[in-house]
Length: 310
Image (cartoon, rainbow, N blue to C red; front, side, top):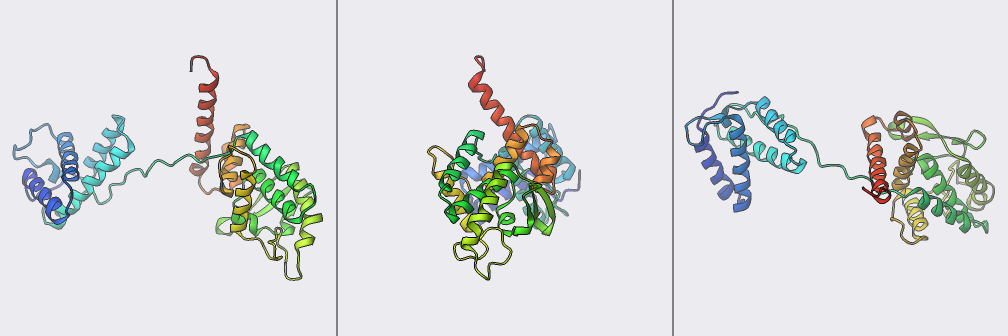
């Protein structure tokens, strides 16, 4: 524990006045701050309040981390832990500014961020139905419909980002090997595979759709907009929203939702996590692990629906 320049009880009373008068905090908020600080004090010592000891003002970073760790071990929620940590940081910053402490022990106190929400995805059946509907709409050879089908197929088949999709050039796609050369974040290049349906859709777009939209200044862009230039991300988002809206009961996803869907379905099929990391172009495996949580949640939902004693 570090040094103290005053007593806890006097400091808590002064902090209470600071919250009420200077900061204008409500009665409820002020009580919550003080409750959190007294909980920390109880953790630091078994001495009753008012005994003249100063464990709060003598605490160091290790003490604070130990307290938060004890809350986690007691199954306190992430929100509770973060709220108590915020109370502690506010108190120690105030105490340091006011000269009660020589140094702020909570300056490097780090807590977990908010729980990351699991992404919404399509089921395998919903994905199949969406792409089949896109294929039907392209049956008459309309250039825009051919393009839209090819983009949706490739987004789902490869899991690439919408920015990576619009950056593709014709030469980036090898229809024989069914591989696409993708320029990802940080200008890092990777090669991603895609399946036969996506390959067929791209081939039809290149043969019957792209020539109809191309103009002399189109350049090498794989996917073109209505005016012949490289298609932009906003238009791709509109295409994905429209494709999903064709069928009732489907979630309204952005192109990134197809990326989430692709990653989850690949993992559901038994792919190795590091392979999916490479496919998606994630720097960190922790980012890819999000999709394992989605798969587990889907497994739990299926179990709950199917098992008679779930």
